[in-house]
Image (cartoon, rainbow, N blue to C red; front, top):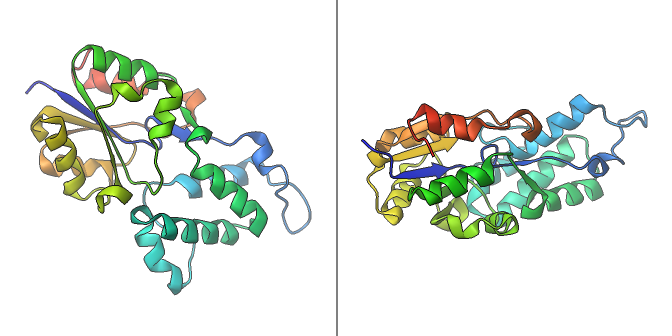
Length: 228
């Protein structure tokens, strides 16, 4: 069946949170040394991992972790605790969290704009479906492509988290396409792969640094015979 719509994940798919070197300049270990690149990379992974618990948390934070993408208040509470338990000071945790929820701090993948423009020009409908607790639309506005996206479906607005089928079905309904006519592109087989349960095709990309992934979005479209 011809693909009439493409559904994209946000984090690790269209954009990636990549720190400016200055973000972590004042991080030091117990001996006063700066964090090494591996430790910095692990910290960023904990801030953006799509699934799985990224740090050991006390019982009082378990509900907040499980429901973090449904409630901005819980999202803030649990991620500040994750950062503190990762060895970050209170002040630095506040600063890093502020960047996590600032759409201007997210970097688009090299082919994000091109893919969105090509799909739009080809008449293929576009939705973004994200497990997120803050408004990601300004990230697309900053790139000048917000008008190319037909629907933005965010978990904290919808009251559901991928892989809940409700999100995929709602996106397809709003795009006026059958699930069988849609391709879901994301970086998590567990979360984004849930689209297959409602009949969508699924394409998975690797959430590597943007400098290492120049054309994965174009490639996954070609893999599903979408040549735009």
